[in-house]
Length: 72
Length: 251
Image (cartoon, rainbow over all chains, first blue to last red; front, side, top):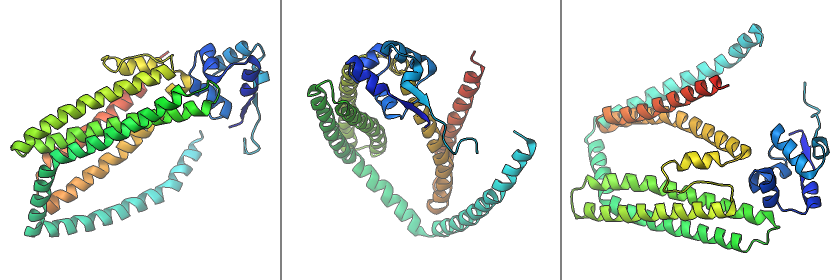
């Protein structure tokens, strides 16, 4: 999946665990865990919500890197 | 998509599809002939009677044994999950993942045992003797304990995930639970449901073919078994397609 994120790093800066981060974003602890592992790409709404909680822009947390095989 | 691409894809896949059909037809023909040949012998009736008698006699005790084993495993998994949750320091998220997985396995066991209970109970009732009465007692106790176990599992899951809503005893539990799931969980449920749809869609024609072959071999009435398999198959296909149409219309 070409969506990379630094959520774990920003969550650590806030000083909250996954459960607390989930509560702030209105999602479950498991979803925060899956986003951090790169197993789930959040919706635009959730990505914006997470960025707002961390007080940064979406691009600071999430970055899209195109695969070399894409478009072939 | 270009028309040529569609035709090209069809041309590429068709030979393999026809080959599978041909091999399946030959295989089915051979099996059907073999089943019919076995059916002409009295041996098949002896085997069928022995299986039916054995299953009927064993059903009440199978109900008891499988229930005890399942409930013991459920209790072990539940206690393991509870110990992980109560000992959680609020930091190590892997601990909560492990507790969640244990609860998921426990929930799977309760669902599987409920189905087994229904099967063994129905088989035991065809005996019309004292063991059939025992099976009523085993069945009631097992169902009661399984529902209680489901309640405890759901309650612990809710403690671990405070955003979750619904009580096991609520008639709208599934709806409330689904609505309290977030986008990632709802996507997971959708993927799991689609996988289940594919599994059952594959299992139904296989079951139909197996029943047909077994009916040749053991000379049993095919009407009710095929009606049930085809009814479940039709129900699955129609409910899936109707829901797809409804979701496609949604603005």
